[in-house]
Image 1 (cartoon, rainbow, N blue to C red):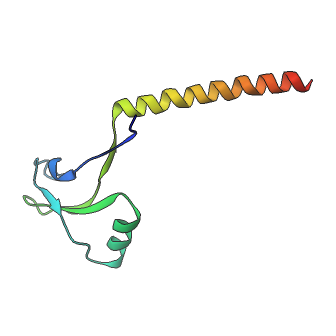
Image 2 (cartoon, one colour):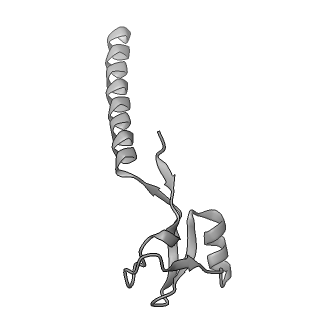
Image 3 (tube, rainbow, N blue to C red):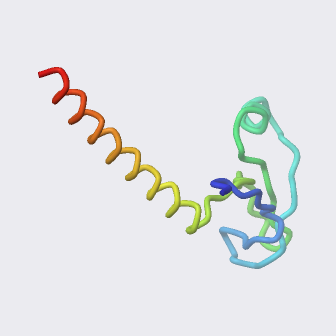
Length: 92
């Protein structure tokens, strides 16, 4: 089960003009953008149509994977609760 899926924003829509397939990678202009590029999952993109420039994520969480993570988290909580009950019952 993959929780994070690699996504190429170039095939997505521009957040400003909503045009599809117009984003392309842009170079980092300053130190802040270089730090963001090297330490996070965000990269700088520019829209060919409207000129928008900003950060887009290269990884996404799908609905199915989010649902699976939620189910596993609930199972872990239930298991921890049962283990706590058993341990406190043994300790008495």
